[in-house]
Image (cartoon, rainbow, N blue to C red; front, top):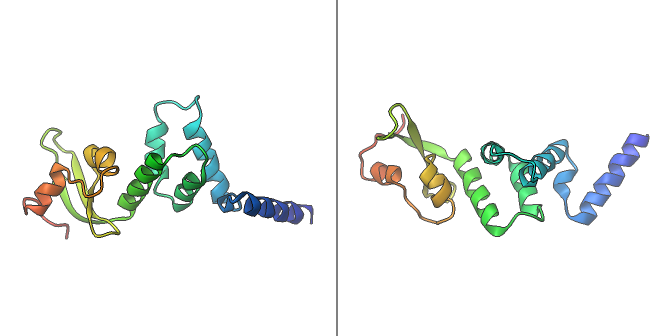
Length: 146
């Protein structure tokens, strides 16, 4: 009975505060992961973890609601989330790093994204940006995924 009352109270507080993502267990986990990301104690792994976490829609919504998230970070995270959900249409092998490959993905808006660092860090901030892997795919130099 007490637990049910506490949960109901927490739900009401979350609604009042506009933080509906806090209601669920996933939302609470997302808040903890974001608190780590914004913490001065977070190490250089914060961006590796961010890249993994951003695929989670609850994490993305919690980031949008977070007071420390600016528009650039939200745009970057939204693009990375879209990339994580995109359909792979091709694969490009790196010329500089033997054995390394990058996926070309069709995004929800119909444009193409790439898993290479160039697209992840430049393309997520510039709409319609095309890295060299996307250009190679569009030029027919890359086979489509079967």
